[in-house]
Image 1 (cartoon, rainbow, N blue to C red):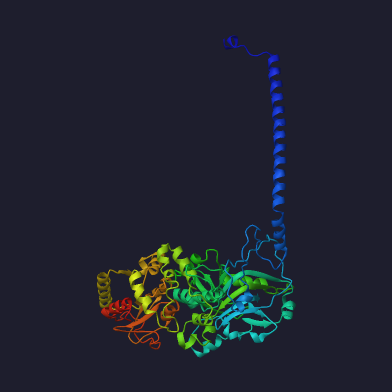
Image 2 (image 1 turned 120 degrees about the vertical axis):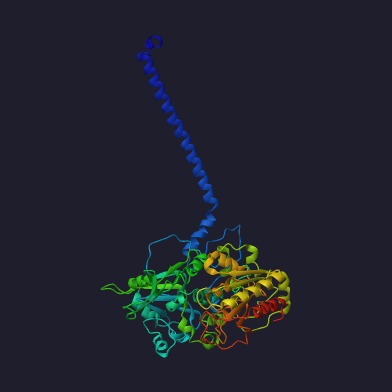
Length: 581
């Protein structure tokens, strides 16, 4: 029935339909070819016009790539800028750096790694005992090599590096830490040529190298407020233009290296390789993220997200790569720029031992005349930003730029009384009490008495009072509290390290509680170096620089029955804010 009402097409109609489909397909293909050809001609014309306009720029770009003296991308003629420099020669001569970004841009694309055909001499940029800044420091088979034709311009090795071992305060251990030629050696350029030929590989960017004994690397205060603070002081001295907002011309360091510490099974072991030093080993907690020092790696990553962190495992690989094996000849790595920190070497100087006992003192003293007032701000503001601190709180240091010169510095110069009086009316007063709950604690009744005295003072004055239990706070919360603190107090201990994140203002104060008769310089020197006033409390008496007692650790110093008179502490804080002390 269906076929009768709708008859199927005959064979001739089918053939006609097929021919129409073939002709339509051919027409479509030819039209597409015409359009594609037109598009290609238009694109070629546009490319010729672009290359014609860019000919001058491309010529200058090629010249920059081919010229070893020009490492920066050329500026377009329409955007002239003042030349910028960050030359190491200027640094060596203590010349001011021109404003701008010091990071050199390598415009050449990646190519196969080849050995260097020339070996630049090692240059001494800046030095203090325990803190040495190098240009072109070599390492081969575990030894650091200084390539120079004139050894007389260099300090003795013992002021740069020490034998890597646990540091003990006895004559035998002190003597054992003296460096050997296996640690660092001086060789001439001719000797370097004979040893390595063209088998030298460059390690670019800045390297912070630590040879501290391991018991200090896993400690928040010793790592952040001593070792890293010293590193940054040496590095920041190369840019005296650092401003109150923390802006700097310095390039981001490439890596931090601890050649003699590695992680094995959750512990750090001090490795002294058989090939280099014989066999010695000591186990300590993980230096960069132990339970005792949860801030170390977090701190580094927060400041420099792309920072490489190398430990003994990485160093051992570098040693193995440069060691002669069979017919293989010796090789070397050339670190283009290095700041080397060594704790034992710092204690062989004049500023650290006996006077302050802080290794960063040596770095501070040698750079005192050339460092910016705001040298620590790039680090402080980076950590605060990473921790979510609001900008108006971060700016509490910057608001005193040009108004206040920086407080009681490490030489004990007097503060400006007018600035203190002004700060009392401009700065929100925030008192933060760091509570210790494991060891070195106040007597329970004195702890309660201190809380009562401080609560009454702050309530009557309209001030903010924080009682900080670090174990109950996140890292961010601890940093946020420190950034908002005017006066920080607590028993001598690691929690006071947070003073490095406080703003530097005419009222910034650290109050450290000691067992009667005891005193230590740890936080006292660090507070003054960052522009804060420090007071040491011993029950109902206090002292401040320069009238500080001698260092002493009497029986009871580390105990859990430390006395303190709360009303004395409250009265000191009130007098400090009112400018009468």
